[in-house]
Length: 82
Image 1 (spheres, rainbow, N blue to C red):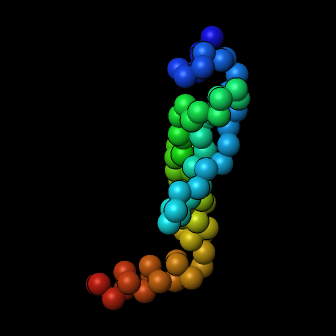
Image 2 (cartoon, rainbow, N blue to C red):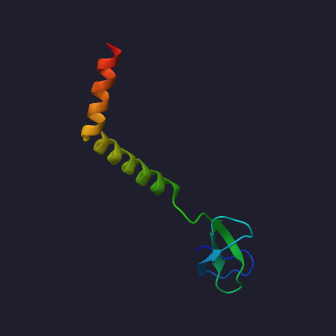
Image 3 (tube, rainbow, N blue to C red):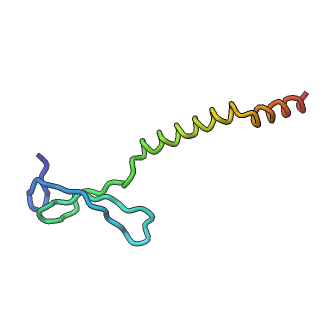
């Protein structure tokens, strides 16, 4: 069981933490007994966010490929290059 390095207590909590002039709030892990900050973690999951952006991009790509406007533009570009 992890223990606080300052008071040896073994119960922790998370809390939002804001630095001056920082765009994002941070999340800190604190000891519930002495309130010492044990760790700081980013407020977002980079991997999950990247996965969501990839899915959205691929969905947009699919919509654009099936769009008649895009097909018309591709046909026009093809005919102009010949």
